[in-house]
Amino acid sequence: VTRRWDVERDVFLSVLSPQARLVLLTLLALSNAQTCVVPAEFSPSLSRLALMTGLSLATIKRVLNELEEGGWVIRKRPDVVKARAEGERTRYRLARPKGGLRQSLGGLPESLGLGSDRATGLGSDRATSQTAFQTKEQQQQKSAPKTTPESVVSDATGATLAEAAAIAKRVQNERSPRSLVGLLRRMAEDGDLTQFLIEQRAATIRADVAAAIAELRRGPECRHGVAGGEALHPQARTPLCPQCRAQARRPAA
Ligand SMILES: [Zn+2]
Image (tube, rainbow, N blue to C red):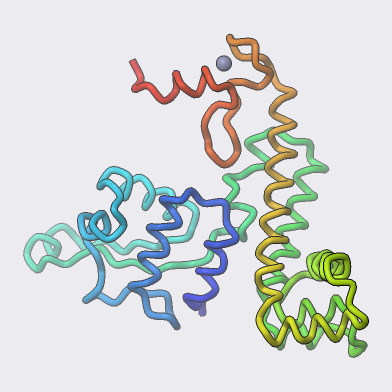
């Protein structure tokens, strides 16, 4: 069962556009916390979603299609007769993205034509990020009985061992505590480690995006002489060259 909390955490760790986050968080606010299903009586019309989010109807429609494609939103549409006669509206269920968070980069490895080594690397990252979302109990069953800084962090936050190691190292560098395990335990009790994990994951995603852009910059020049200028930024999905971008923004002739 997917709980609202799990989807919310995925939203914050994702690279979704601000509009997509807003629509998702709005639907989550209407949904049952245990099931992520929006109850029939709260199921919003598109115009209600537009009012609630401040976004245009066209943006709501586009974003919902993207979210459905990414596996974040599952829509159940009423048949036309029922919709007309009984005013039955589309029902929404929220879910965690297809194939884990890395997929929400928009199929990064394939679309960039990166080598198979690179793609495999991302694939295994995806597998470890799945581990990161296991429950505390699941993690403890597997972890060694010995308490290490890493085990304190991963038990408290569900971080992978690599993430936990990076967080422990950061705390060590920033605070130079007498007992790293002791400090990490106190931070875990105060809930301070979650923010570190969020920042750690954001940094990993930024590094992936930066590597992807560097790869694109090796591509052919656009007509303005910018290397990889016509290639699309992996998050913004707009051309890397500012002039190409301005042209793309103008309505198609
Ligand atoms: Zn250009």
